[in-house]
Image (tube, rainbow, N blue to C red; front, side):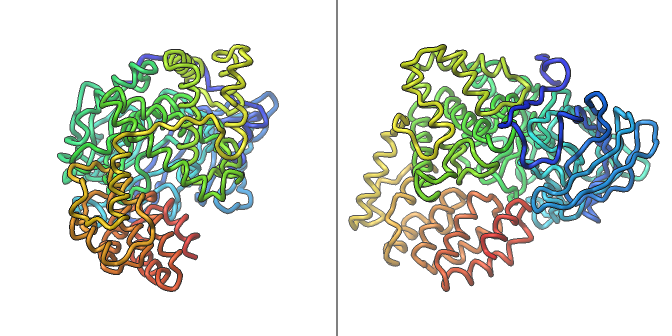
Length: 608
């Protein structure tokens, strides 16, 4: 059941400041806005489409005659009011990536019903044939809504600042199970005369539309605690449950930091390997890549991250994608605090130090600290690399170190309470900080450099760097190998995923073939079943045109679809010009049908 902590009465407010204007949406919510979505859809695996209706509840300003929705290649059959009377509608010009506006004459209607079908190429939906699943017997469907992909299967105002409650009835083949990011009203489904099953779901809280998520396939469930569990294909469920044994403790730990978990259940769905991200924080049901299943629980910080989004992102949401750091920076900081309390300060320090590494790399790759794409608040989706995560979390860590942890934690708890179930902007967050933390203290204001962090490129000089003694020992091994030490003499026994990443990425990019062969022989890097380690190794191999690793590379990019692990490999191949580009194009042609549309879109541009 959904937790008893109630959202504010009525729809979440729409921010009307210039900073809150969503440049990636056609909606005009100040005129008419969607407050609730009711889906009744059939998942047709033969045509790879979702077909049926979306009924939308509308809140309109006095005198409003139209509402504008976001769509992307939907086929609209008709639109009516709640009584079935036809409404006039039109679809405007298509704009690359953003889609097309759907304008509907309301005629006084407060509820409209759209009869439609999605396209087989819907950017949010990936229809997997059986051979691309773990079980190899049944097909699978998964969705990925963030940031603006859900408009390709749900006609609504697809903007994070326009929060909406939703319900759904989903009809699926009788041998498949449906799960969604809401309360599961019919866990076993309802038998229909034609042999199909109907599943019903509800999300009573108003959420940003990108958090409506669905998966359909051969899905099993294993409880992990009173309010936690894991869904996965039967072939994966045992490994997934073993890796996620601490999930219930994670929820309790998060609550002890920043207040109650307000979404009822917290379950994890481990997806087939084509899922494009590490995880997706869909309410009640985190979607997760199987690449984190390494058998040693070394990568459960991924789950801590997605759980933390239940506060930062799902509870308090960036109003537009110009402020994505309000979701990701807060969550990366919160994730680290969960890892520290649940596991150890040493483990948290290691992971925080690696965030600093990523921050420095992204600042460099963006073109240096003066590059506009290094600003936290900027163009929508315009922040370079993972700076929303890395620079954003470093900003919050810097505030913590400046004001003290106890004071900072009290502020954050109150911040989540004050803004629960509402959108937020950078300007709004800074105003809240000044009103409830700085409180007119001019000296503290000067120390924090709030506006510089939020609006200026680069890294302010007060940035806090957490240093890990464990990683310093790894750095010593990097120095030893770079100086000529044999690979077998390295003190590598028991290294974690993060330590291997530090070692491989810390090595000089230029290596002789025999040195790479020595590493590979000693540690079996080309055959590693740890996707994080293997990706870092393959980056190094590509940089040196190390051809013995090419079979490993081919197997990896054709079996893993997680963008953060495969995109650097294609980028590395491209950088190798006449040697690398033919390899990249050959591998991509083979692997492309297995990738999610989100990954395909970015790699098509990279390799065009």
